[in-house]
Image (cartoon, rainbow, N blue to C red):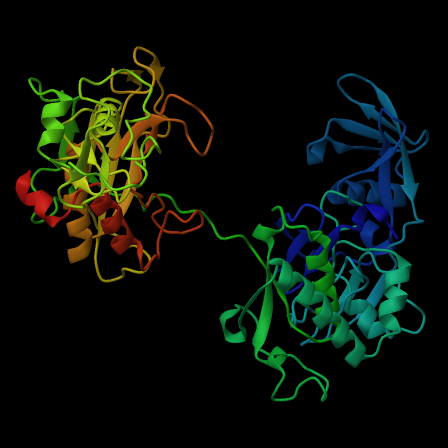
Length: 551
């Protein structure tokens, strides 16, 4: 057989071509040709390329050339079908009408694509060989007629199965979209297995894929196009057998990943299961849906209970006039007799002086204080140093339990936040419209509160579109996000965990949903726990329902 076709499988149910070594899925179609035409007779016309190998003409060009050849014309001008060439049959040459360059042509009758005839069975698609089977458990029955495909049948195989083993009327001679085939050895091996052994082999192979994460299980009725139950042998179709209750789905989207299992296993499993009468379906990767359908300006509405439709933020200066010691004094109680345990900031004993070696605060290094709400104890010297290394906004966060004292603010660069209603529903929220949030932050220069003051920062991917359901809880989340925006806590400047780029605008520990109609990246819907999770993340930043009353 043609080794170039070995990686390909044709799924006759969905009419898709699956390439095992790359995981690529392409649509295919069937063409029927008159038995008197070039493909009907197994004739292929080829031209010699610059490296001395031969390339077949497109099917329609080959038919035109063969028609003129059979009528004993001395030459044929291909201009009428869109090609600036003349084929001279006396010299077997191709002449370019514009450059007058000549190439050799040849007519082949020795291809490995024999003609088969017969009617395809209605409920079963059989593999011609490993690497060339349709992977579905049932297939539509095409009309009876002349079929040409990459099939070489063992003498013991009946003609009807031979006809069913190839996509009907598949184009021949063109490697651009081959139906797929493989060698004789695997075909003979399959032919020697009875139905029960084939089923056992298919099950064992599919278990390998299931264990590796390349195959998913799903209810049979949930797989489009599969309407028949698998025809199992009696010893395999017992009530205890779960194989009769589901159809394995091989998701092609996973075949390019880092799994240690060779992608060809998916194709092999499809062949074995199809041969054993077990349905299997190669699925297309789901589409990423980042944005909703187009929305006109008249369809965009303000959100009831939320004032305005946009909010800008600028750099907020820390309150002046208070030293770090004065700020911390509000949150601390002095401890005269500290316990014999470590300060979790400097890791020295609280009974000893602070081990901090940075810029010297004005307090004594042996003073110890207890935070008033959570009760954790530290060197006051260490707390002052920690405050000086932060945003210096008048707030303090306990390094042990993350309790926030005061109002925490961030270092988000200036930008704009827009929010409004659009008349579309999110997956998982069919009964309400959608709140769309649009964040816009331009690139700029880092300020003193940023990692590298005076250095420029980038702002990739803006404007960023995010989505919430227009439900009671969705509006609650929006109101708290507005507080977080005003406090400059939505974004920060740092190093992107996605690209590794430094000095760029990044998300700041409050997750947003940026996929509107899918959830392929984990940043979309449906996600039943998202609203509760983001409320918890906002609470960790010191933002709760009480915060909306304070703003």
